[in-house]
Structure formats: structure tokens, C-alpha cells
Length: 293
Image (tube, rainbow, N blue to C red):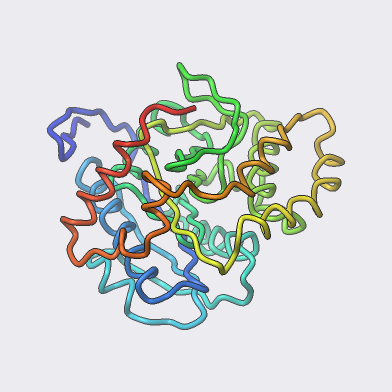
């Protein structure tokens, strides 16, 4: 089947996908929830326009509201009550619910405060098409974790659990995230377990996401969680090497006071009133990132 994407490019799609987007909303302000869900709606709409795909969303929140439906009209939404503020626990619940439907063959997990670039989902699907039954990750803008990646192919040792696309076949073989690990290590562990079973892990080089930061869960807190779980992780994977120094440096890094990083700290940067402005500003922010591995 030949289809044309919204930019006029021809592409071939050999499989019709049914994608569930799992988004964690707890602890966010109403404005943060609005820009989060708006970015999801725009990215989902772009991917649907570019290929034959059905998309639905599962939102995890402390209270159910119609905010997501208003911010992302046309996207079918359902809710799960947040029983805890553990991303790992709620991500597992999302995957169980998503893949509990026989029609769903893909699940995209998004952590709180993620903002998707409008082309991210399409780019991740394109990478999946080239590498079937593989875990697909996106690039964190403006800063990235220190991950081993083959530049030519995008093959990676692991990808961030903040924005990760998981096919049904991988989930059925690997299971969910390890609930004994914090989110970032649980994501790495998930990738390692998938690789041990023969599945691939790839970066979609054109898929980008930004994060807005708050005092709700600081980088120092994340670093503390990782330090507490490091021994368990190393016991599970004694032969797999992580650059712990670089990982700690990233997690505790203070954001720059100028440029794109400072812009992400400004609550007004993503406070847009229209879909056009959201598209325009995310496009401009991502253009500053450049090719980084």
C-alpha cells in the first residue's frame, strides 16, 4: 500500500497498526496536562494522516476529567485511576490493559511531563517498519542520556522509558517492567531482557520529545533512586556495562540558563492556545537540537 505523508513524501506501509498511547498524568497542573495531551493529539493525528493506523489513548490520573478529550479531539480516550505515583507500576497497568485488547499490536508509553514533537509517533512507526518486532525509542531534547548507538542504523543498547514504543510480540515474550527498579533502570532492564530473547532495540533518529521539569520529582531524587537500586541492577546484569558516571551526571545536571534548555524551564514556553502555535514552537525548539548521539 502506498500512502503520502502530510509533507508530500511517499512511503510504503506493509502493516496496519493499532496503537495505544499510555500517558501518565498524575502530579501535573491543569496547564501541563493540557499541553501534554495536546501534543499527543497532534502527534497521533499526524501519524494517522501519514499511514493506515488506528490510535487510542489510556490516561492514568488521580481523577477522571474531560481535559484530554478537549485537548485532543478525535482521539479515543479511556482512564485508569492512579493507584500510586510509580511510573513503572502504572506503565505495567497500561500495557496489561492495552494488550488485553486483541486488536492492539503496539503500545507507546509516555512518562509525566513529556511533550511530543508532532512527527515523533510517525518517525517511531517508520523505524519499526524497518525493524519489525523491535523496541523503538525517541531522542530526548535538549539533553540526551549517554547511550551506545550505531549512527548508521540507530541500533541501541537501550532506550529511555520516558518515551518507548513496545510491540505486542515483545511484551508477550518479555513481560512488563521490573517493579523493583526505578523508571530509568526498569526501562534499561526491559531492553536488556528483550535483547536476550533476540529482539532489537532502536532509536528513531527523527523522533524527539521534550520534558518540562518541576519540583515534583527532581533530578537529584531520580539519582538517589538509581543509587539505591544500582546493586540489584548490577546483580541482574553483571556482564552488561553501564556508564554510571555519565548517567549520574545527566540526572543531576542543572539545566542551562540560556538556550533551549532554559526555554523548557519557562512555564510560558509550552503555554499555547492553538494547535498551530504548539506545532510551530515545538518545530523551532527541535530544530535547535541538531544531530546528537
